[in-house]
Structures are given as structure tokens and as C-alpha cells.
Length: 258
Image 1 (cartoon, rainbow, N blue to C red):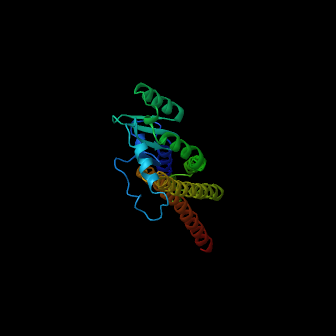
Image 2: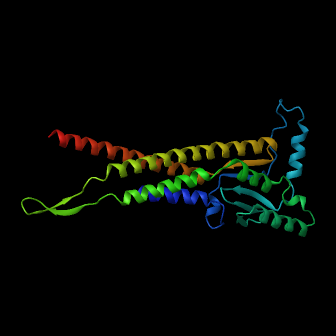
Image 3: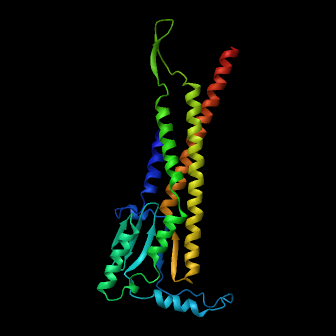
């Protein structure tokens, strides 16, 4: 039950990443930020038109209002050029704020020259999927409830009239249902976090490539740690329940043989 609680907390923090600037802004899937220096891709012999890399860098290397955009499952976070950080679940609200800053400086295009907010929003809406994580959270919660029904230790009077502590075996049906829920939760969590890891890495790499190094993409370390830690916890729950069921069956068989 403790491991179930830890799993639910980890997945909840992961889902809530980038919805608030108070700590949750550090829980993000991918980060896109403007480079301070031009990447040396123009020397690559594979480039048929090497001049485009310099042009993209010249466009991005201006007085941009934003310095970095972080994307989570349910929100985006902006790091402004002055170091301030803003987070919201609405990309339109963040874009409106950036446009307003650009209007005040009489250069709307320089506010976000390569449209990092739009790229991050498309990543959040079209690439990542949080439905499997929600399913894993629900299944883990149901597993927690079923575990709470398992009988605990209590005192009974034996044949000699003395007190002894006993703990009855839980119902086979309840144990099998709990094992099934935990196994499903583990599979959904594993697929979701593996999908998250691959998509975030691919999105960061492709953003760097398509902008010729003008954008630096990074995978969120905290989000990956939270996700894989939750998967490990789900695996521990399923394995522990499987061992419990097999042990009880073995004890019951030995008792019957005696």
C-alpha cells in the first residue's frame, strides 16, 4: 500500500509538470531554447545549401523576449530574457503575453522569432499522450483499495486458552484481482513512460536539426526520473503480489498434504 501511494504521487507530479512556476516548472518533458552561439553545421558536407543555417541563426539571434520554452503533459513554461518564468496550461495565453511584449518593443517578430511556443504546443498536443498514465493511476488506486481489504493481525484464543496473534489469508479472488490490476497498471505505465522517453528525445533532436542548431533541445531529467521510478514501483507491486499468491498456494498445499 505504501508503494502504491508513492506510485500515485510520482505519476501525479509528472502529470502536473509545467502547470505552475513554483517547483513544477522543473518537471518537463522537453525544453527548447535559443542558442547563444551559432552551431557549426554549415561545414557539414551533406548540406546542399549551407547558407540557410546562417540565415536561420541570424533570424533567431535577436532580442527575443523568451529564452526557453518547456513542455509538460498539461502545460507550458516560458523563461523570459530577464530570468522570469511563467507557466500556464494555455499556450494561447502565453503567446498573447509574448506578443504584447513585442508590441511594446515595436518588434513583434523578435519576441519569439522561431515560434518556440507553437512548436512546444504542437509537441504537447500531437505527440505526447497522457491517457495511459491516467489509466495507470486509476488502476494503482484500485489496487490500493483492494489491498486495504486484506485481513490484518488480530488476537485469538487457542485450544489451551492462551492468546495468540493470527493473520488469515486474504481471499484468492481478491488477490488475483489485485494482481491483475497491478499487472495492467505496470504495462500501461511502462508503455507510457517508454513512449514519453522516445518522443521527448526525438522531438529535441529534430528541433535542433530542423533549425540547424539555432535551437537547443533537452529532455527533462526530472520527468524521466519520476516516470521510470513510478514504473519500477508498479513492477515491485506486481512482483510482490505474485510472490504472495504463490507462497500462499504453496503453504495451503503443504497444509493439505499434512
